[in-house]
Image (cartoon, rainbow, N blue to C red; front, side, top):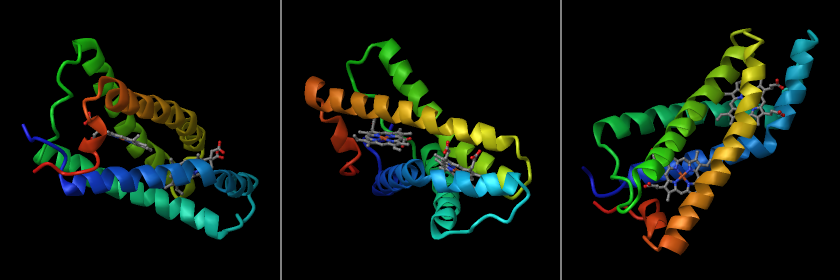
Length: 161
Ligand code: HEM
Ligand code: HEM
């Protein structure tokens, strides 16, 4: 079992976090472009619309890379001293993130370029789901760092090996 996340794994975590926050904050204009597509009109391809497509596709590529690293290099064990139930909840949250980090761009691309319009509805569900997971994730990270005081945040700041 590796001692910590590698420099690349840490960089990927933060790059994906920034890109996802960007998507959540600036996603609305994509909705406007999509309304035009659904009305059979040409969408207004603003810079924000292109940024949504490019940032979202980048998330897909970076997350595939991240998963490959998880499988080949591995990740550190869950923090010591956690009950089995809490460890499982943390694990489930991370699996949920991976499903959303892959599912959001894939459904977006298939709706926009693949013409599977129903997937746009599924795509929209990623927004509340991601917001809930992010809030719980940050609360859990802060709880560990500042209340349990196990230095958990450092795992995503400095590589250990
Ligand atoms: C969109 C935002 C975010 C996403 C999608 C996300 C996703 C993830 C995922 C999937 C993991 C599991 C490890 C891995 O496979 O790489 C993880 C670990 C971690 N994240 Fe985030 N994260 C986000 C934002 C944040 C923020 C804002 C913080 C800081 C407050 C944070 C702190 C951490 C820490 C400390 C770990 C390590 C936990 C451990 O080793 O058990 N994350 N994150
Ligand atoms: C991590 C990746 C992505 C995230 C987190 C994300 C998130 C979002 C958000 C928050 C919205 C606005 C939803 C609303 O206003 O209720 C949206 C709309 C949309 N996004 Fe994405 N997006 C991602 C990737 C993509 C990609 C790669 C495409 C491909 C073109 C895409 C296509 C769309 C479309 C077509 C809409 C309009 C859907 C509708 O209004 O029904 N998205 N996205």
